[in-house]
Length: 234
Image 1 (tube, one colour):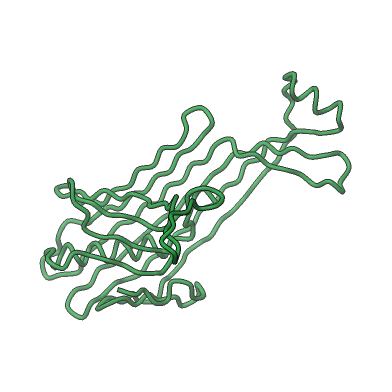
Image 2 (cartoon, rainbow, N blue to C red; image 1 turned 90 degrees about the vertical axis):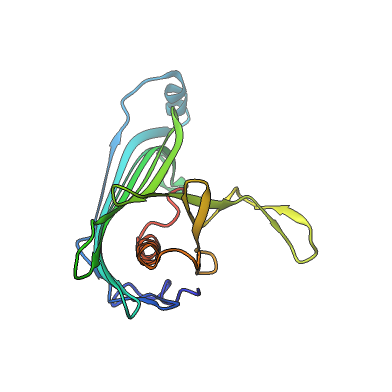
């Protein structure tokens, strides 16, 4: 299914794919802040920087966003309430001569996206919870976790990154600059049930899934596509 509306303006944004479409996405408060303070540590490498007229600052960046929307396919309807949080701590190196600007190095990143999915029906079923967590720091490395569950059934959500590709001549090439974020893969136990390709804005889903599960997956994928942060490592 080709997804239309992915790259449109966020004002009155709507997605359409296959039989599914979202209502207008309502975005709530968007909050971002940052502070920067001089690093007072005197480790040997920092003393060396001071000799060459470099200073090191600690910088913290925080973002928060929320949104809500509904998804329909002509027969079923679901409502989504989502919250997104991002924080990063950086070490900023700056030359005392302003002409040289500054360079920042990420020390730690924490990101969490959560959404409640409520199916609208005569007998309202249990709500589904979507959680996507990304933690990264120099000491513990990268940790990513994603899942979609109603308490009984659980799907795992895994980011997809492309490290190699085949060109028109059939030659295998490595992506310049490291693996490229491409989308998400949704699995249950050992099987893939859905894939969202954010490079070409396409969505695949198994045809023989229960219609209720198809609706939940289409709604979850809409949430992943519409959140503000795409590749956390950018």
